[in-house]
Image 1 (spheres, rainbow, N blue to C red):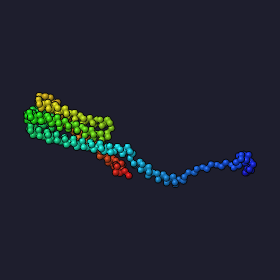
Image 2: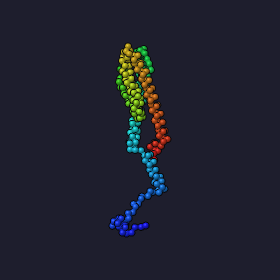
Image 3: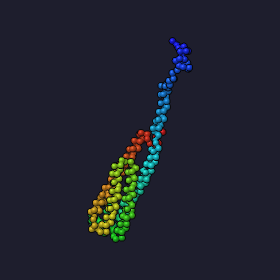
Image 4: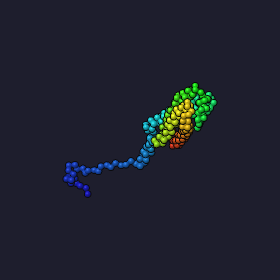
Length: 237
């Protein structure tokens, strides 16, 4: 039964109105929540596909490093061909002998034959080639290879191991050229050591070419994988 006004006054004081329950917030209909989730999902997908600022900044940096490494590689290969096929080929014609740098191994008789065929004047020019083009070539070659290795983003231990090969090639190249000048001037010098350095030079050069083939294969494989995942810059919507 309901309370009278006097009973309500004694129970609640002057405010004779009984407290009412606070309204409870009702949840949105299930259909509306599903519609909002469907509307938000394309935005979330677009956010996932959109590269971050760091990724956008890293891509031009990586492209520029590849560009500089590619330019250095072209220069190194042109200088390599000029040195081995043009300059040494000319000295081979003058001496009538195959030049030691173009051979895998040689002995003291070969060095004497080259020195005799060149003569005093051409020996001076031959030694000058070692101090000019023969000095620049291994340095540019090693720099180009190190740039390509750095642009390939290998793990640090792998990059260090691969970078040691072109550096060793440059060191062996310079040491072999210096000692070759010594034995050309004096065939009684350490011809066996020079022959060993020339052999090692060609072995290291072959190892560098193998590195080049592997880096090219790795680059093409990564591009195909990125294309299949839709991660190339032209595929991003």
